[in-house]
Amino acid sequence: MQSLLEIKSGETPYKVAVSDWFRDADGAVMFKVISKKRPDGEIELVYYTQRGDGRKRVMQDIIIAEADFWRVMDIIKESLKEFFPGIKFKVENIDFSDKTQARVAQANKFGVWKLLFISWLKCQGMAFKTLFKK
Image 1 (cartoon, rainbow, N blue to C red):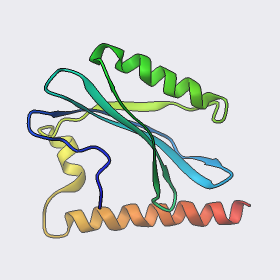
Image 2: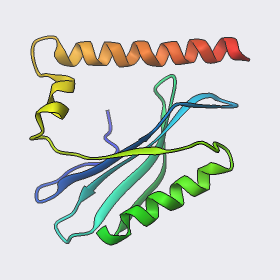
Image 3: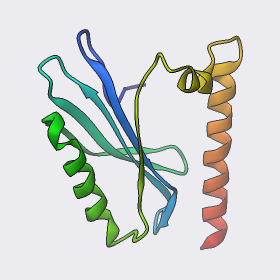
Image 4: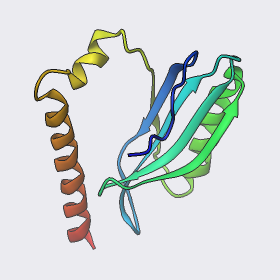
């Protein structure tokens, strides 16, 4: 599996942004942004789509100044408003020391597999709903 954003030594996770699920001609789609802070202080972000069947497509992989992060998020949102008028992004800091974020995928014997299975089920459900909406 290839990662969308590799965090190397000296880099730290920055923010993640996720939209709600929407539907277009190809079915269920969600828009996401993941980002990291590089040692030089710049922010590298990857803007991509995720489909109901789990496929991902990178739209942009860019490097920006930290001060421009919110302006770039506004530009992404504005570019999608024509197609998805009610689009909003939930933006959160990525903090691996935060216990509430760590609880999502506990590293117990079955925690990771359970999380993957539930994610797979949700994607299959969205694909199933999309199939019958046409």
